[in-house]
Image 1: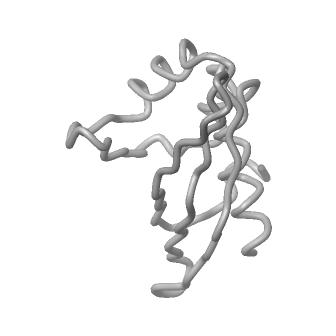
Image 2: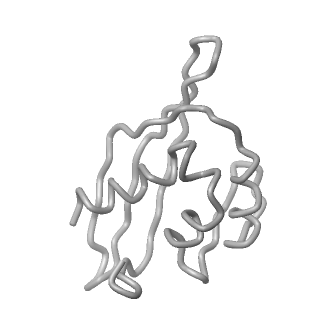
Image 3: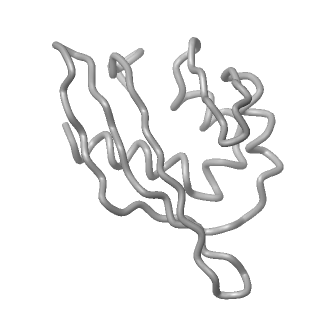
Length: 106
């Protein structure tokens, strides 16, 4: 399960996936909520719209962990590394929590 969750989180970081509204919509639950570093809260519709114009910056994951909090409820934490065109790297702490489940067999 941990590797599957890592692959799903990684898909959301890839430029091709981020730029595709249908791909992002497929990966996020309808009740998805994101708390941004600014303190703002974003819903699925806002994230799908924002990611379409996010650009082609490459990202990767390090220090990935998945911890069961209750049956079917998993907390995922990791460091996202963003590779800037000037060669610099930016790091951000990420987390996802929820009842991870397949919808329509996906």
